[in-house]
Image 1 (cartoon, rainbow, N blue to C red):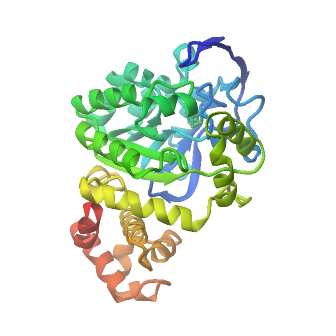
Image 2: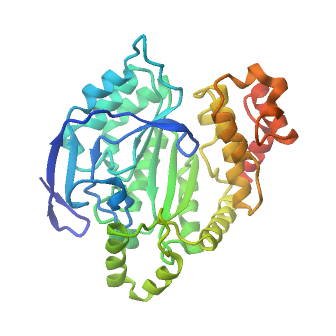
Image 3: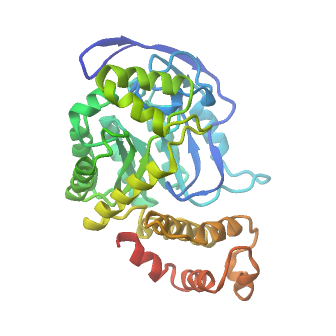
Length: 387
Ligand code: SF4
């Protein structure tokens, strides 16, 4: 299969078809970034070939040359139908959004035009009454507006796009296989006009290139102009091995002076994390900008309040509070409290008088949990969400 890059080059892709053993990937606990217990990769490998993509790292065992070889799980839909079908012995799926996208291959990369696995997966989500959260960089998602609208009306759909900035020129260097940010924003505006909640994952910002205050502000400003419901922010990871080598080669070609700066902040952490000081500084900048535009920094409660079990609702709200406080450089006990709750088998409402016996739950946290159980939300959380 041949595809055209942003520069106009024709790139030959190698397609490998495989029979997968399973499709739905279950998280140990609710993921409060995506409000999801389950994700899926219908393709492994990605023709979009973003220079910073961590799918390239050896850790994920993606076969072949990343960016040139794509593996297609040809039995994905058959498997998914089997995994979604409620059977007597199986525990039912946990209530949450099903996350389609991200991971090691964009669900709307060019090959989707012919295989249509994402579209067929969406049809199953509709059939089984499941809310979905889509994350992509491709405007091909517009093809599925009909089914996404139907899902949104019945259960809810969220469409998110990821960006490293909204600058088309920089994106052409680091995201050679995807439509420019200006096109992605137009697609988001289109989905918003169709009544579908949408968000921006400003993730990853590229150190010393797209993490500059002006560029970050331009992204949040444009998100705000389009009427997006949230902007989720994050820095870049660079794992030693294929991911780092590939990225540094491109960096040397376009920004040779920055290589030394990268060596200072990426010092071989197992997960490719940059230094804590670096992340603190970009988080601080983002927080100021998000406040200025009153932009929610996590998926707002209104979009998930009727989608989760009561324990998961409490976990997500506590984790969001934890994130908001840490963005301000403050300490927070709420992440640990959320973790304790994630280990519970019984619903929180059945143990209202015993909450303080749980690890990490003091008087203030208890108050927040009781308020969520009674009203469905927390006034403290609401204040922090946009503040
Ligand atoms: S679109 Fe996503 S999965 Fe594909 S190369 Fe880019 S970052 Fe990786």
